[in-house]
Image (cartoon, rainbow, N blue to C red; front, side, top):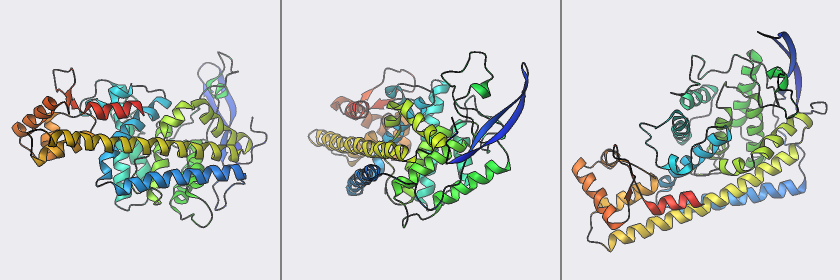
Length: 394
């Protein structure tokens, strides 16, 4: 499979299986990224240009909003649901949007919501002007697995064991897992740690004179996924880094972009394109595919943003035409757009209201049809049906 590889090398690995005894195999180690982009076709450069235009349109609209951060959490929850589904942790989008984030109903829901927490931490770091470091990546991974079955002493550390990814379609049923694997990433050790540090430095460098940010992001994503630096969570962290890097280099002024739904819908091709870079140096198809993903994701996110702004305006009109005149009613509408579901206690805390005032205000907006309640009797949650419709149907 790797006979024509131009992007890395195979290195020997070995171990002992309790049943079959000693084994030897090979792992793939990607070459470090350079300051020069791979050779790309005119068609791929056009894809890249289209992606940049779509990202610019999304960012232009975000900049014009009075408070673009209002739309960050809905985007993150949608991203969390899709990026987790890509890794085999599935929860319906409606369930994620209305979940009790303080007391998730299941371990799988905890995993999904951990992604939202992790992304919030990452975006706050970048917003504060902090540079990406390996220790920051480690903290993100630790946050992602907190309270899940994969949490352990090695959480937040570059992996110290050999891992394998997937299974070849032609693998025999009883074949040793390492030999049946679709891909075997770099072995653990000092070399892996050094390559992760090199990648982080490369991601933080200024490539504006030599590479388009879309190409930089495509190369970074490939390198991170191929190194597979952590025992768990590499796919989810890697897809977060796509948006985080675009945010850090100024391509996006607000990280509302949602990319994983597009890749999830093309799961097989996504993994095939990544593998083809390692096996045969097929950078051009990968960058083209990646750029198309950013372009169409930006267009979808842009459309969803405009719809949410329209819903926000419509709900505020409903408040204005009612007997309610308090500014806090309009603030609660904004809150309902930014938080697809919430409790009265959260409104009390986040809006600085007394519990009685928060409870009464929520009840008034329910009477107006602006808000609705979930079916739960304990820790009842509320949501704006029109907001949920946008998030579920775009």
